[in-house]
Each structure stands twice: as structure tokens, then as C-alpha cells.
Length: 362
Image (cartoon, rainbow, N blue to C red; front, side, top):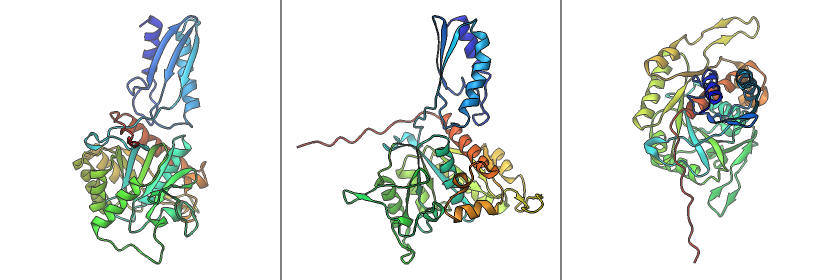
């Protein structure tokens, strides 16, 4: 390595993007530094979607590196490369989805589905190809949150494969597309678990970087089916600051660890209520619990979201916050949380791709 190449590498080792938490070199994003005639070629590939951050990152790299080049031109190639990451027990990644991320909660009522849809939309806004699977078999809420008209049904191919329903730029699938309000699902565990596996494997997801799976609350059959049959690259546990919710969230973290699924972090919902009249902040459900849990279980808090009437109204109205008001403070919190989640995943070991199925022609 030449003196200039070494100086460039050292300089890049001092750039630490906030969501990554480590420097560009340690994160493995610097794939090439090459001194050529009259110029230095530099290739940097962040492993997570960060379209909104790339212009600032480009400026920072140029400002730090250019003075080291002794008059040579900087040829910088900066683009995102999302790879599949290791799933539990080294299971190969799904053919059509590089990374499956499970969004879970130990108990209901903590805003998990609203979080899941906004994280999916945030990853899409940052430039990723994203799918959302509503695996809450008994109470599917994503069709309403995505603003899809009643009676929306997926197209089918070859009689048994579903084409995902597009909404706000993401590919979606839900039990809500397959049953009507008049025919509620009353199933025992094995049948519900079978429905999840079927929806997952019979949906024709198209070339996804991330498939966000909105799990039903709790730690039962459906969660275990996911752990046994579907390659999951990472999980996120949603909680509120209440002690009882945190106890349930701890169960969720421990369940994923038992089945060898990495927990990327905790999302704390309803962390603070901001009065819409006077702006006064109040911690209705307590304070600091997620941070304490994060420290005790070595799991970072990816984001803290307010108790907000607007977030609920936008989700209930069919245009979740990230799509409805992308420049709002709440949307920015979801964007930051999604980037941290994907950045943390990018630091985990690379996974294997499944081999395509070979069909013999007779």
C-alpha cells in the first residue's frame, strides 16, 4: 500500500456515521483505495440504505481525503450495497428476500404494527426494495394502515402463488387480503403457523433487500414457526416504557436469543407525550426503562417515539407518518430508527444465498 493510500485509509477510519456507530473502515464499507496516474480511486459501499445521508457523507469524505492526495484528483464511487446477512443456524437466505427482519412485541397494544409499517416505509424512502408481511394472522391491521380499499385481494399465479399487493411503494401481503371481516379467523396454533409459512413461501416477493415481518404479539406458536422454518436475519422488539411492557419485551428478546436470531435493538414507543396545545412534555408511561433494559441485555435502543395523536390518525387513515408527512419530526424519528436498524444488521456476518431451484425438463 502506498503512502497516500495508507493516509486515505487512516482518514476514512476517522469517519463514524451516527447510525453505524463505528468507522467506515471497521464497518467494511471501504472496498478499494487505489493510486492511479494523476488520481486516486476510492470505492465506498455502505451496507444499509441511507440515500438521504449520501450527499453529506460524500462531502465529508471529499473534505477529509482531498488534502492528502498531493494534487491528485479524487475519483470517489459511493453507493449502497445491501447483502444478505446470517440467519439463525446459518440457514440460507430466501431467494426473493435478502434479509428478513421480524418486528415483535411481548404484549399487544404497544404500537408494533404502526412501527413495522413506518420502518418498512422508511427503508423504502432511503432507497431499499422492501416488502411487508402482516403475520398477525388473527388481527391483521396492515391493509387498513396501508389505505387499501376493502376487499383488496392479491392476484394469484399458477393457482397457488400470490402476487404481493403494492402500497406506498412497498410489496405487501396480509391475511387481511385473504379473509373478510365477516369471516374472522378462529384457528388452533398449528393451522395459524401453517398459514404464516404458506403466506411467506407462496408470495412472489420480487428481489427484496428487506422483508419486514409484523408478528402477532407474544411468544407463541407463530413466533416459533418463524424461527424454525424461515431464515430471519434479525429481530426488533417494540415496547412502551411501562414496567409490565418491558417485562414482556425482555421475554421477546430472550425468545429470539434462544432460537439463535440476533436482536438488532429495541424501539421504545409512546416514550413521551407532547401537549399539542402548549408543547409540555410528559412521560405518561414512565421513563428510562428501555435504556435500562438495553444496558442489562446488551441491546441498543434504536429509537424512541412519542405518544402522538398524529401518528395514530395517519396510520388509521391509511397513510402512515413516513408516507403522509415525510418532513415531520415524527417521520424523521422513524427514518433514524430504520437506518440504525439496517446499519446494525450490516455489521453482522454475511449470510448465504439459497440456490435457485433447478427444474428438470423431460
